[in-house]
Length: 500
Image (cartoon, rainbow, N blue to C red; front, side, top):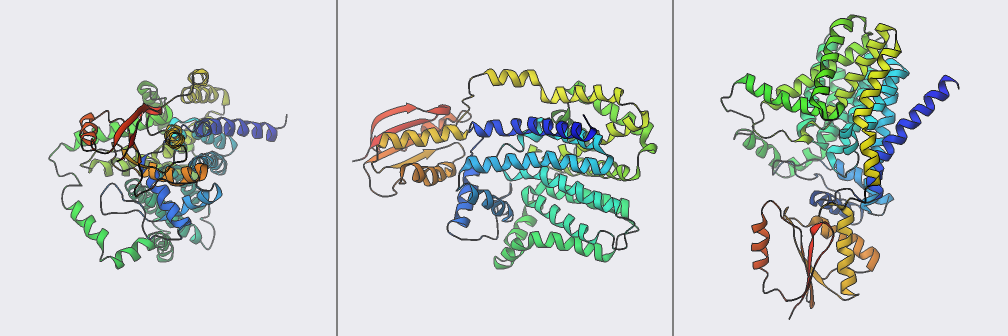
């Protein structure tokens, strides 16, 4: 077997494993369909069906500050292809994750050869966080894909230093990509932007020109332009909100020891490291970090220049995140760090490849790779899960929500009806979308808003604050006469009532 065929089949196996991990839950409709996914689907439907283009997207974690419309516009593509089917859109997210594996091989091969490409793509394929980020419909989950594209653009910048026109187009592309990332998750995107800018200044301080900086800023400006237009039209609503929020405690002003703060945030990054590369095992994660540190200590001088620049960039960006989140007064949510696993994976891949080259011995490195691959894939656990009956899940699982819609329509038997929904999240976006899309597609009509004698009361369980559901039901005691109550999938209760 020739080397090229061996590499081809190796990459095919990596893609096959990564595809199964990402798509198996989507095929069985086991992905989450939460209220914010329903909200996004309604917004995309409004763009595609009603042709109402928006200048802003969903709200960020801070009320009054919005994302741009790019997430909705990206979702419009699979929405059109799959006619609004959430399973098709989840499949699109899975395909993006699989493309990320392939891009990992391409960028790894460019940086350090086939071995680095295989290593980088392998970790992307089986890392639990990388798998989960491409198995659900959520805007931050596109960030790993865009982060790998940023690495590809950085490679072009690092390797084109001899050209007269030094990567001008790459600075524009970098600005566009970083703008997209901010539009997917503002906290991660902002810190990532700062880290990349700091690394470019560190590496290219003598080669940066106003033209390059201008093209970089132009890329950002193009992505931010819809929100800029919105701001002008609405008297700088988001700008005023941003100033108000940050002047009232969003950034921590507590008198806590800087060492305690850094240690706490370092713990968050270490836990993310373990979840990315060590199968959530702290001991394995600590050993791996130690090996990375010792490898840099002993082999850094022997590392090729482009790979050094990547290592410098990654360490600067990670340091930026550590410093940045240390100023946060709020909890550090996982989506604030959603793209950091890509940095961890490329760093470890670069170190492994560099040690392999320095020692000139693959047989020392291959067992380490195999152990890490085994720990992250956990094949025994995967096989056990295959043998188990299909996981039912909770009220947020798409399969269960479809079962609820089917139950209501089948019980109605073609009669007009209306419904009310209780969800702990308060908003009923997911049901509104499914009744609008799935109900109309399969059963030919949608619930009425006006007079009808048939009412369905749909109640999701509220495990954290069960009294809220009891109070909600008390307020609806006079809404019709109870005919039947049934527990559907995921613990959701549906009451059939007749109205006077």
